[in-house]
Picture 1 (cartoon, rainbow, N blue to C red):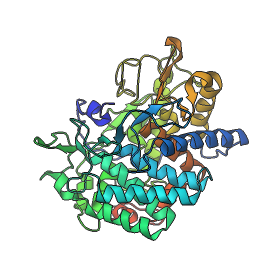
Picture 2: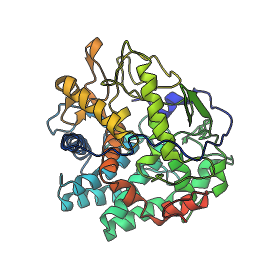
Picture 3: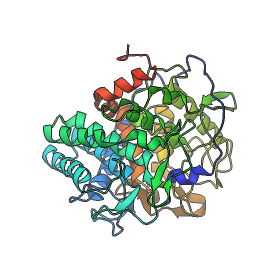
Length: 429
């Protein structure tokens, strides 16, 4: 799979920094789940947790980037692990224990193995990890970068496990992994963080300089107890505003996942910085995305919508909108509405349940939905992708219980960073 961020690097960074109105209408505010909703969410979470358990290495704790959706418990023969998939996997293990899918003893053993291996055996540079690696050896996959975003996703999983389990061994290993990261190094002398670094070539020219999934990187770096960057860097990325069919919200020309990833762990509900309430911003982004999909009535409807960076008939694609991104062809990507479950619960659940009801025999397997499908073209992706299963299971659990938000925000570095950059709201003063 291509580097998701690399697909987007060619898109022009949008200029300008705007202040949004102080409040937004919160859609689905009065939503409450039906028994059918709960049953569906439990199926979605259980199947995703199966992926992270079965497609993870018992020796290294790394998780495969992708796997076939019909393996019946066997591990896929491919060897490419994703550091981001592993971060989502650590979070999914917390959910698996909470929901009773796995016993605490086996989960704790896997988490300890994962953290110890990444601290003491996994190749790293200044505490950062390579995007893709061999699942058993940890060796860098040919040509890939040392990744600031994927290391950050791993750290979010590491810190979630630390707070959730309250296990002394896990806590020690997790804190060492976090404190080892040299965040100022990734600035490379600039006002914003670099997207990565390659041996022999140095830092990538692309930087995290406009609003997207970057919030977790800056908050982790600002909150670091050992190698922090200045809180002022929070003001150095632009916050361009999208205007679409009456919707107004902060966004770059990026797929929907950029409004979901940081909010899988950081709890922005009822909190705002000097620029926006980012939770409400993602509510609007999701509503706009649904409206965008429905503007193609030849393909999409209330029972079939949602596109984000994913597999396609032509290979991995960074598509979405608004505005239109990529060669949109009528494919649907289940993790797009699944990753927005806390933002538009009723509407996202409705479309997910409808898609499973109609196309479940072709589009649903051992690990839940396939990564993408296009019924009109009779194409159903044979694979699932770890990061897409990850955002789906984490946001489903956050909708149901707030478990991941509650655990992650118990790390003092999380709230400290939010305070330092000017957030106000519950628990922040």
